[in-house]
Image 1 (cartoon, rainbow, N blue to C red):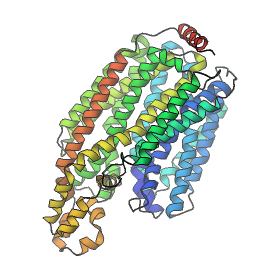
Image 2: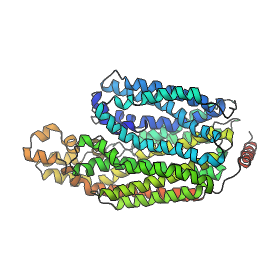
Image 3: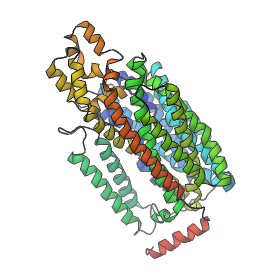
Image 4: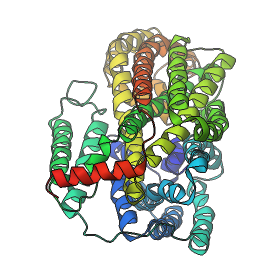
Amino acid sequence: MDASIVIISLPAIFRGIGLDPLAPGNIGYLLWMILGYLLVSAVLVVVLGRLGDMFGRVRIYNLGFLIFAIASVALSLDPFYGGAGAMWLILWRIVQAFGGSMLTANSAAILTDAFPARQRGMALGINQITALAGQFLGLLAGGLLAVVHWRAVFWVSVPISVAGTIWSYLSLRETASGRRSRIDWLGNVTFAAGAGVLLAGITYGIQPYGGSPTGWGNPMVLAGVFGGLALLALFCFVETRVAEPMFNLALFRVRAFAAGNIAALLTAIARGGLQFMLIIWLQGIWLPLRGYDYADTPLWAGIFMLPLTFGFLLAGPISGYLSDRFGARLFSTLGLCLVACSFVGLLLLPTDFDYLTFAALLLLSGLGQGMFSAPNTSSIMGSVPPEHRGVASGMRSTFQNSGTALSIGVFFALMISGLASSLPATLSSGLQAHGVPAETAHHVASLPPVSTLFATFLGNNPVEHLLGPAVLGDLPAAQRETLTGYTFFPHLVSEPFHHGLVIVFGVAAAMAVVAAIASALRGGHRDTGEVRDALASSATGSGR
C-alpha cells in the first residue's frame, strides 16, 4: 500500500506543505514523490535478498520492519514547508523503501522455506495477491485519508509498522541456515547503479526537452539509459568472474525461473500502465462528465477501480491452491490470456463508457492477474535450491518493481506521443471558440501535453491550470464558467485522448500476449537437486 498510497493523495500533500508541483522547477519534486519509493525498491531487493541468504532471512526481514517503522514515523512528522518539506518527504520515503525492500526481498523466501511443496502455491498466493491488491487499495486509502488530513496518509503506516516490527521479532524464527560468504561489492555497486540510472533516465524521458513533447532527445536522458545499460552489462561480466557472485546468472538457465521472471516483468509493465492510464481516464474525462469536482476525482477514481482489486483477491489464493495440485503453467498462461482480452476490451470502449462494462473488464483483468501472479511466484521460487531463494526472491521483486517504474516512462511517453499529434489543434480551436485570444490559445496549445496529464493526474482543473487566473479574469463570466466547468475539457480532449489510449492499451495487450507465451514455455518442474548440479557445473565451467 505504501508504494501507491501517495499517488492519489499528492494534491493534498503538496497543498499541506504549500508547494505547487506544476510550477516551473518543481516537477522534479513531483516525479521523485511518485518514483522514489519504486526506484529504490527495484534497485535494492536483489542486494538485500542476497544478504538474507548470507546472514539470515528473518534477521534482514526484522531489521527491515524496524527501518520501515522509523521512516513511517518521520514521514508523519514533516516539520518543513515548501521545497524543504518536499525534500524531507522524498528522503524519508527512500528510507522507507529501503526498509520495505528488506521485507519484500525476503518474505517469499521465508515462506518457501517454511511450507512444503504441496502447500507452497497457496502460501505464496496469499502473500503475492495481498501485496498486489495493496497497490490498488493504496489508491483508495490515499484518497480517503487525504480528505481527513494529508499527514494521515503517513499516520496509517505507523501503528501497522510498529506492531509488525514487534510481532516479527517475537514470532519469526530462522528455518534455513545462512551461508556466510564474502560480499560481492563490485557486483552490488554495478547492479544498483546500473538499474537506478537506467530507470531514472527512462522516467525523465517523459519530460519535454527543447521543442519535443518528450525528453528522449535529451543528452542527459540518453546518457542515463545507455550508461545504465553499460553498467548492467559490466555487472553481468563481473558476476561470471568473481568467486562468490551477488547473483548466480546461471539461474537464468533454469527455464521456469527465466520464463517466470520475463512474464512477471512484462505483466508488471502492463499492470503499471493500466493503473496510471485508468487514473487519468477517470479523473480527466469520465468523472467530470458526471459532475464530480476535479478536486474529488482522486478519491472516486480509487473507488471505481475496486473491481480490479476484487479480481485479485478472488483469483489469487484459489489459483495458488490449484497450482499446487495441477502445476503453474496452465493457470499462469490462462490468466495472462484473460489480461490480454481485458486490454483489448478497454481499448474498444468509448471514453464516455458504460460503467458496468468497464467494471466487468476491470474484474476480468484482476482475475487474470490473480491467476497469473500466485502460480508464477510459486513456480519461480520452487525452481531454485534453498540456498539461492533469498536472491531469487530479490530478483523476482526487482523484475516486478522495475516493471512498475518502467511503465510510467513507457506508457506516459506513448500517451504523450499520441496526444501531441492531435491535442494542440483541438485545444487551440476549442479555446478560441470560447473567447480566448488566438495568440494565447496557440501558446497554451503548444505547451507539452505532459503538463495537462499531470494536472489531470493531480486532480486539478486542466483548463484553470493552463490559462491561469489572469487570462480567465479577462473573459466574460459565461465563457469563463464554460471553460472551467466539468464538461468542456472532457469533451474537448476525448478524441485525442482515445487515440493515445488505443496506442497504450494496444501495446499493453501485446505485452500480455508475449508474457503468456513465455509462461507457456516455462516447462515442467525440475528437482532442485538437478538445478543445484547444473549451477555447480556452470560455476566450474566459468573457472569459479
